[in-house]
Length: 458
Ligand code: C2O
Ligand code: CU
Image (tube, rainbow, N blue to C red; front, side):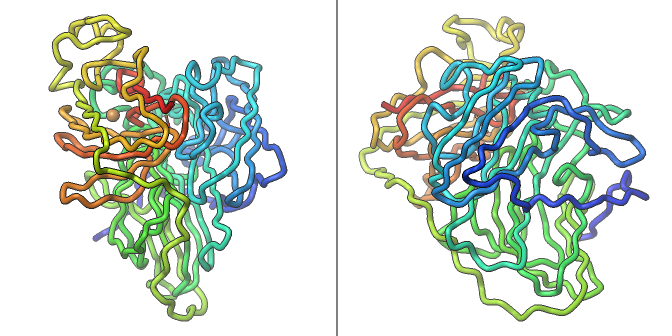
């Protein structure tokens, strides 16, 4: 693999930003102020970009706690529109889930909301608004939440890499046009400028043989990243925060919007060489993280052990109810005759006029009745058929699910599953957490144009 440097990087010295640092700890109530800010995400010659950010940072203030700690965060809304904070991937009380109109009122400008809950699970999570999501996330509102295990694996460094994709104008402003019907009905709002921790590329130094824990977080609204390694040996440790039972070496990582991948990585490049993480794109592979290898070598290590598991529910597939979900709509395929929106049957043209392009089981948008009503303790199977011409990142709030594999085996615990075009994939979840929980595509251009339904656990 020949890895290129991005052209626009010529002459730009990207200053690394410490993301691993502990900025919030148990005991302190952290304030997250969502407000406009100016940050340097474009190369220096472009100047700063006006974004919306948590505490003026892109990504927002990194939050770090230990498993079992209580998180206490006060959202302050400094935007000119309503917002909330959703804690993505966390199993928390429903009232803390941050979905306006469903779990809490919209937080109006100048107002605040206190989030407080116990962190049951260790792992890599993130937070983002759940109101006007396409615009708010695309303008920069997203931050990482790391919950450390009580006995984390021994590593030389623990780094978080936040992958993002921005649609920028020639003047390095965030492109408006959040009502772009083409984005809604096609692959979502794909960007033209990729960043790692808010920078065009990340540069660090490492010793040969160093062992790293890398936490990858995709906060992009549409882009699926495919990453390759050079001079690094990588093992998969966890997906969407949840540890894998077996640690497997992996040559590449595919990470869809909202997903997280925890890796353990050993530097195999020698002193004087570079180790790289590259993004494989249509026209080649581009370096995203560059590790200059220098100094003395570390001792060779054993194959890493799995992370301690979180306390997950039992999935009782035998006799479990099955609720099939057919995903339809979008360009090239369109919606079925008689799809409904807000309880009213509409034809495709009427739906498009209302900004609705997608449906689950013929229902566009958030209906009055849940897609699934499950009894506490029940296991529910959801076979999903993607009959659209696009991939979707299907996300369930409040609990993780596992994929029921075609051979009958079970996939890893996840909170977001990439379902490619034409695919049929089945998931199963245990109704372990009472409340009303969103079930939607995590490409907000799709989410806001029909792919947003909900389940109720009673
Ligand atoms: Cu991260 Cu409803 O989403
Ligand atoms: Cu989608």
